[in-house]
Amino acid sequence: MTYVVTESCIRCKYTDCVDVCPVDCFREGPNFLVIDPEECIDCTLCVAECPVEAIYAEDDVPADQQHFIALNAELSRQWKPIVERKDPLPDAEDWAKVKGKLDELVR
Picture (cartoon, rainbow, N blue to C red):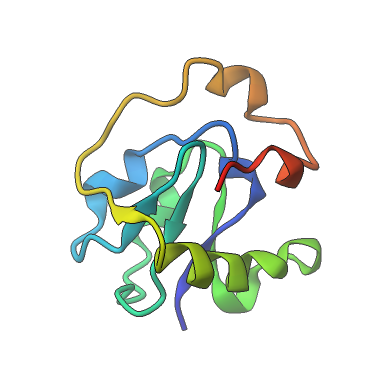
């Protein structure tokens, strides 16, 4: 099992999770983070750190977010690792509670 970043991260990109990851499994896109399923060791540390509750165990990803499992795997092969915490996107707070943001994802 791996952990998966879901829709809540889009246009927020809080990186609190990156600070606690012992294996540097996060990858950074322009306005979203993903977890590399090949690197994740299922430690659960990132889950509690996410202020928008965007990270789930693969088995617990909500039904309407299941497509993010494949999306994390796909984008993790394209994006570079992020290993240090950065400031969230400037308008992250405005987007934190917005639903239906998949169209906002920049690849």
